Figure 1 (cartoon, rainbow, N blue to C red):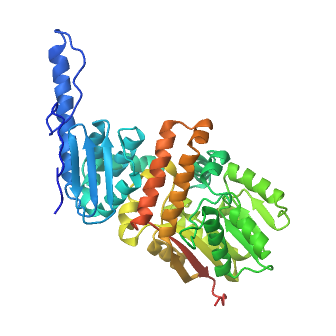
Figure 2: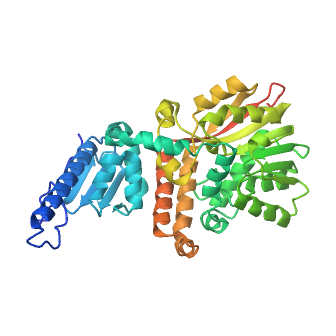
Length: 441
């Protein structure tokens, strides 16, 4: 049974049904107008609050506590050990944001400082675990905003020019900023932790090496990497396996960093760095690697992306794709919506499902699937490491010129994604695809 208002604590100053500040000053002449305006505002606030609390009363898994000036309200059940979160509401606009904006409204309300939580990831895990019970928040008034959001998102399509703008908006924030959050290898993708005690850097290197082992890299191979990042994989593969690497990025900041990195490590004879859109690549390669770049391709361009990968491989070639995925069961709904990540973090971002990728591969290429490995829990741990690094370096983040709105946005982003992976709302997989002539055992 859901627990509704199980631990109500009233303040004695406002009725438990609502909470609000009292207008500070009103003259005799303006009192009726001021009072009526305030009453309308108060009535609307109460309606939004009741609507949100009613929806939260449907929680069944875990427990969510909401604390505002009227008291503390608990929803769900305490039966799910460890799955419990608490929200502290600072501004009654929180309820309006959630009632009118749904999940995206909740994100925007946090960014504005309307509420806080000591463990935002836990709050998001509770909400993710009760997704079906909370769909009404997105299907209510929030649905009226979908066309507007869809139009705005459509303007961020990943054409060649659009991709350049979208990539720059995120990856060109500042190399110094990413250096504060990431491990020394400057890896911005899921690591693989061989033990709970493994460092983030060790997990990143293990991820790179796992890809190399799956591809059975050897010194004679010429490997194409689509999506250089800051150069971590190219450096590892060239140094540890003696391969030739051609790697491309369209981020100016990443290109400059990787160029310096490869020169400093004496690897320019083995690594060719390009600043080129994947659609414009030419050549024929033994092996191909793309680590969490497919999320920047966009739904419309997925078939062309896989077709291009197939064209760039030799007849006996093989590729390893690391991709963040959305479950097939949620794909149709997801593709028609705009979420927090697309709106505030990765413009033009789009998560494919395994089914959507399989359809593209079958329809546009001669590739076949060899192996798929999901390791979502490792991404959750990766995000926790990044979040800890982010907060340990928060003074340095501020010194780079990033304001409180940015800090709250990125904290929300890191918690949001961690919760998604822990509750398996999203996944991450390494996928091996092979050409017809490949005899990869």
